[in-house]
Image (tube, rainbow, N blue to C red):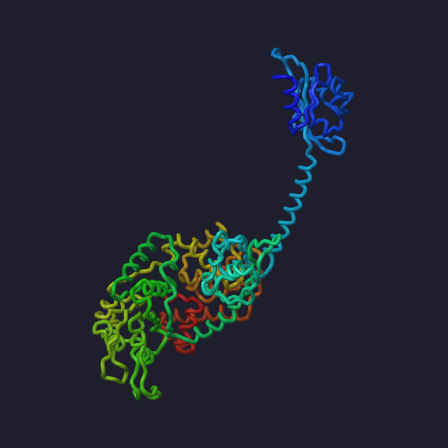
Length: 577
């Protein structure tokens, strides 16, 4: 290759290049070297390098034969990075040296700008995450790109469930405000929606994100308005012992990974598709009502009414009039024209009879007629009325023992026990404790406005060691109290947050000691209502135990109605053995 061609190639490179002979005389000085040094090639070529470039290290490389790589140094008003290498012949003798260098001033400035941008980004993220307003951001295509912890608290949805998903993923009822903003490029204010798995009532304000005149996305601020509505609904529910409701749970809501529980779920799913009675059996707090909802929703009756009746919460006379209805004049105070019973009103649907073991023999006879003849006779009436209901019953007592002792009709037992489903207690499926805890935490995140993510291995070990006599209801109560003990910025349940395992079967002195220890162990001062509730729970448990869990006798001894007693048993999660 001609010397002219070589020179053209060297002058075309972006990197500056200076080469010297063994005696230090410059032989190559390309255009990039001229640009960076400010020295013309004709004034450098043929000159000793030390006379042309101040502080040059090429003489040192010639002398030692050692290369110097990626050396940063100043050169006038700029900074350069240089590679200096000896040039050797076939015998390994040094015959010269070459330096290749480039300007890194611009790169350093860009690095500084990147650092500043990262600091600004970190500050903006901190502000975004610390605000108490729930915020969600989508891009110009309506795909979620950002949500803050407050969003999780309000909606009950984690970032993983929203980011990368369409803007409508969190909406249960209503139109996506993000999509409306992207379509109109105009802000939207005070939009009413229901969001998240718990259908939280919210008001949303949203606005377009405009960058350099182009639509780049939408940002929404979500305001929770469901708390007052929730409290009102809970008050109404607390006043009702018999609830007419739409079955809201499905088999997807039953949280379990334990093999024995999976077998129970499979059996319940098969039962759902059959037009037969189902008997749910299990200890208090195992989730019998949840199974009743799920069976109804998986059946052909799912579009009809689901009625839940607690047979232990009402006197037998009132229970009969509610179940079977009554004719005008059947008793003092009877409504003019009579009243339909729940079996009539729920015709075509499902009636869930909870605490079926508590009904008296007379009511058992009438219930047997409903199952066998598909008809009822109102209280005070004689005319049979056809009904089409499916009966799901539940109990936590030993029905076989009740049959042996004559307290429960044998023929009714066999009619109810066509498909028995035995729900195992929590102590027999401890593998479900972790997923159940996460499920409970997700709900409490919304109820308490928290963003708790998990439970520590040590705290989980403590939960696994306990026997949970109150089952899932007790676990819910326990996790709720643990969350109350946590500071607002804590996201992992630790051992120190767990309340004391007082249990509900211990005697009064042990329970009171546990309550005192729990009260003293937490850094949160409990309300008077909480302290009174704990004492009330202890006393009710003691009286129930003294009366061998006969609720009617316990209510008389406590001086309250059976209805009030049952409400308190459910409220405090008291185990009925």
